[in-house]
Length: 99
Image (cartoon, rainbow, N blue to C red; front, side):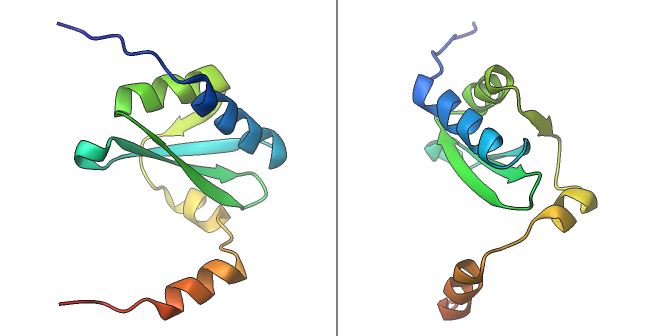
């Protein structure tokens, strides 16, 4: 049994907007359990961001409809393309591990 869930237009437009603002983009889709799927977008200029979908099927469909290529995994070239902002480095520096 296959369920065809609708893809939210806001998700598609958000992905398209990111790609347009950053000279194109590639996506990596990560399953995050009950929460759904995280779409990590990496722009051609190295900026990255993310969106959330209800499932990996919706995430894949949204990326396809937005014209964004989906990478199967975090390849070295894609990681090297990412340029974290100074704000991100600062926020990561403030985080502590809890046990």
